[in-house]
Amino acid sequence: LAIEPLAAAGDIPDGALAGLVGSRTYTGQHVEYVVEVGAQRLLARMTVEQHAAAGAGLAVGEKVAVRFNPDRTVVIREP
Image 1 (spheres, one colour):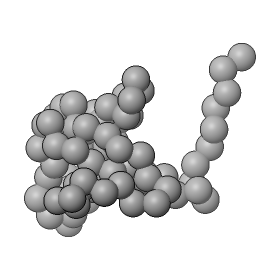
Image 2 (spheres, helix red, strand yellow):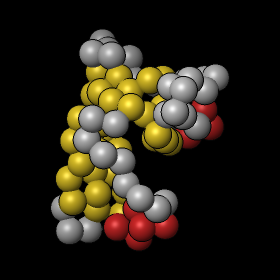
Image 3 (tube, rainbow, N blue to C red):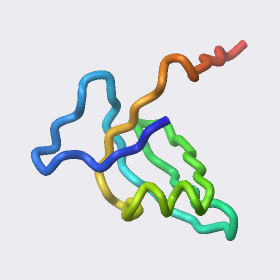
Image 4 (cartoon, helix red, strand yellow):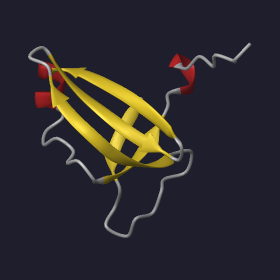
């Protein structure tokens, strides 16, 4: 799962979903982002080290692009 700020023009990259950062929480060992994509909420969790390596964090209310690595994605269907 990759979450990136949208370009200034707001263009969504091919294969990505538009989202909005709903919350950012520091838990001591992780930084968690809740991203709202349509009616769905996605939780992204990064270690503090990963977060620091990624540079500046995303702000609550920021528009983002959400991408999934197809090789590391599993679809879970409802029964």
